[in-house]
Length: 231
Image (cartoon, rainbow, N blue to C red; front, side, top):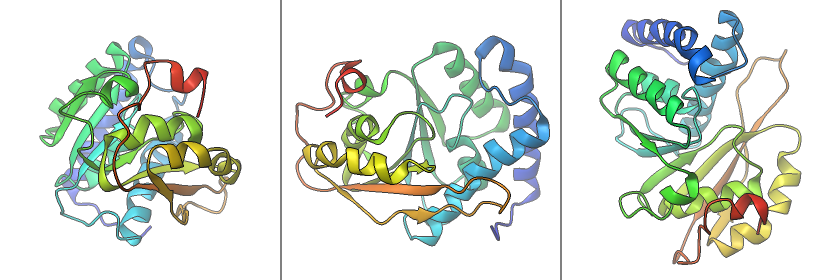
């Protein structure tokens, strides 16, 4: 990935790995318990997303971009991105309180002063005055299919902000299925980005939707509706 990390970032990743192990049983953070696999899948793939977004000019190193991570669970992809670039302002939006407690502990333990945690469902966050239409970038990893994710994410974006989500082999199909949702939320699909991953893992691409124009007050709908009845 051609990503150079300072020693303090390496130390933070090591401590992060320890915290994942300490909290996993009580917070249900990840099914991946092998340390090497966790570093490759959770840390490596999150950093690959950061690299892809930088190469596309959607993030710039050292720039104080305002980023939301929807449904981060154990903190992915947002926390590794913030460790690598502490200049970003990161808001982790998580619906499960035990995971919120873990994320707060991680931010405090690692000294990530630009990271905050919001305990809310995505639909609630999209209606909150402090969060709605306020982010430069929204990221989400394995949270929902594109028709649902678009309704979760686009209300959080400022005008011209971008949703970025890694997807596997069904990514193109999901994007097609999300066409109506993208139009309804005032979005425009951009060309997907290649995710820089090793050759021995299944390929992924980063799917991008830019929000442009007025934000419809009808969205997001009440909690549960986007998943139950996708647009």
